[in-house]
Image (cartoon, rainbow, N blue to C red; front, side, top):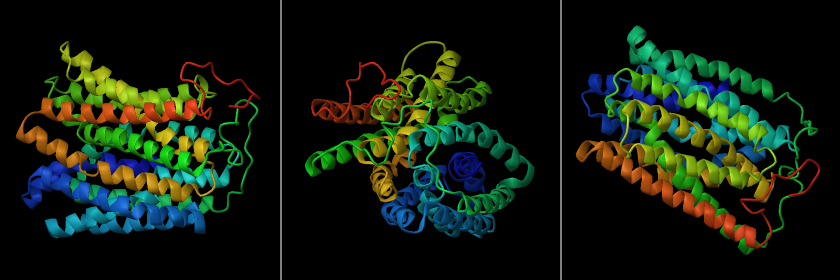
Length: 400
């Protein structure tokens, strides 16, 4: 529930609220996305410090404080007298969002379910995949009903609920988890692969670049998803197609929990990056616009759905769960620093040139991200740390 509210109000609602905000303050929409990007950038610099805090004081405490901060900031946003106040508050929201979104939640799950982290992450993201499906139409409805300021007040109240739920999780005891149906040899924090410092450093660098570039592509196209689909001239079907993304995330996460549950998380990360690339490529192909729109949204949803899982599961599988908060903070820093400009640059290229040029640029970024992950897998496969991509899934009770 808290991840649905967090992503829905902080991330997915922004492009829906942006036109009304831009009209009231008399600014261009790309300027608002520029503020959004600045917040992501600064959030990247803050992520390692917040990640270290997750390890030191506990993720549940950090998430409780983060939700209270979001409630306050969104309330202040609702009463922003001008664009500069609105911009400063928007930047603060994005800067602190690390404390309430997936990275913090993954650290909490690693702390509460240390022997079953991957399964817990899959379960969480399976449910939270409905955030876009719920909040895109909800945000549009609320703007029509109470305006963008009233919408922010409703979102602020929802974060008070999140704070209560996060506070409650502090009392949840640490659990070994049930592992009867899932092979946990890839998940146990006590048994990460043995790597030399040099190998571990290079692996982390390649993983960071791969996650950052695929995240940059996803950020660009999901923030502008509705606008991209509108450019295909399919009318109101653009909104219906956009809603396909959420269910696609849920379906692919079910597959991760069943079909790919015994595959190494790095294999799933490569599938995710390949799906994101394929989805963006569809936008540049000729064919029936409606069919391409729905296929694009479904495949993009699948890729984004898996990316949310692997950004927590792969670091655990490769490096172990000890110090996961700091490690996720560093990965988020690199991801945000490289991806912070994505929403603004996409909007600028689309306005200055065309939507086709903007989509083409996102395609190049996604290709490079997939290449980094394939290089990482090839490097670790040669060292015997991960199995070949074409290997059969690991059976229950067998080691990786």
